[in-house]
Amino acid sequence: MTERLEQAIAQLQTLSTDQQEAIATLILAELEEEKRWNDSFARSPNLLAKLAAEAMAEHRLGKTQELDPETL
Image (cartoon, rainbow, N blue to C red; front, side, top):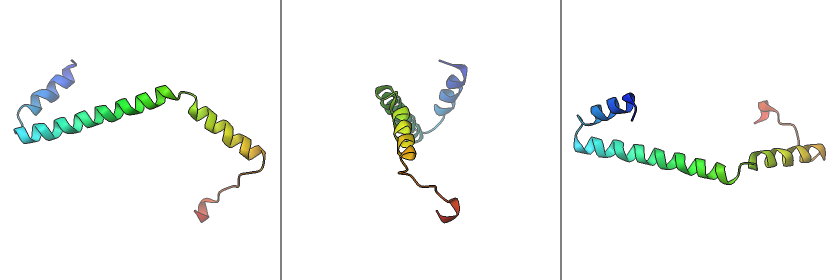
């Protein structure tokens, strides 16, 4: 465990039980979300490249149109 994490935990221990539970819930949710993102990207490492290639192919075929930021 890092020193900074130890400091954070020491401060958390001074909080009420309700506050500790709330922060623990936030931390665990954040960790789970990070895991989901990592798992998603691990399953589809070439997805972004594939989507970019498809977009470029559509552009070369004239199936795209230029966007004007002033009209968005």
